Image 1 (cartoon, rainbow, N blue to C red):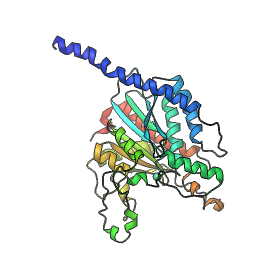
Image 2: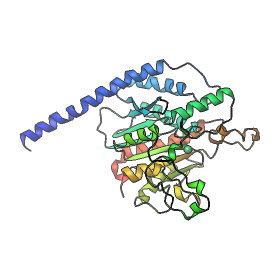
Image 3: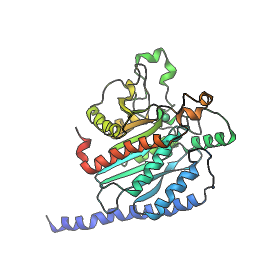
Image 4: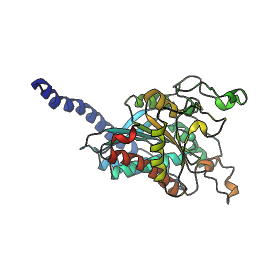
Length: 346
Ligand SMILES: [Zn+2]
């Protein structure tokens, strides 16, 4: 090795790392100030308000500044910050990067509960060799509306962002329906007017430029771990890897574990055009999963709640459902941490 090359190895990494760290610390203070200005409120049911779960995450950010690093992923239509959290061991080299996000659909609060719980778990035991980026809530504007509905006792069905666009039909890959059924039930295969038309989906796409090896999008309900494609009936070239990783997550859930399935094969007529699942895999090659948490929030013994849209997605007692989701995510991240990148290939 030449002297110059040796010198480059000694100097280059520190030059590369310093500005990134400085930037993260900036957001560290900014996040804590932002949380300190949030209203003090308490939701009477088991689901935390936006202010409440941030108040639970903030102590981890404050006490483990190099481990849990907040950053702003982007802004919503109404200019609210979309917060993300990078979690890793600062003393170890990162070989694999995993992205987890929830709250793409306004009513699916169980996904945000699960993502927030996962942040707290990772903060306590950060994985060796893996950086995990968690976004607990992507569709902040939609969620704010549901919080207001619940305070006012209104039962409103909400899925989209402030412009009522379904963010999960706003991505680039597999937008055009190919299923023969599209002629019979065309409304079923709808997508947004143009790809990445909304600031929330744009922000996620920008983050994906960083390149993640694996990504998990959390939704409700169904009790499935879905793999691409969502918009095509065909299998992917990586379907064996997808199923192996999917089963690692499923097996960690114990009794009544979620099933692993290709999303387009949920039903013979079903396709999702322009989904985040196909976008992350098709555009960036990220091994992407979509988990439909819970088998439904509806309780057969409480028919009085069947008309409540919120309950379709969010069971009255969320804890064991959150545990099931966190168990799957934990198994994915720690298997990669212990076994290395080999688990991601062939
Ligand atoms: Zn959803």
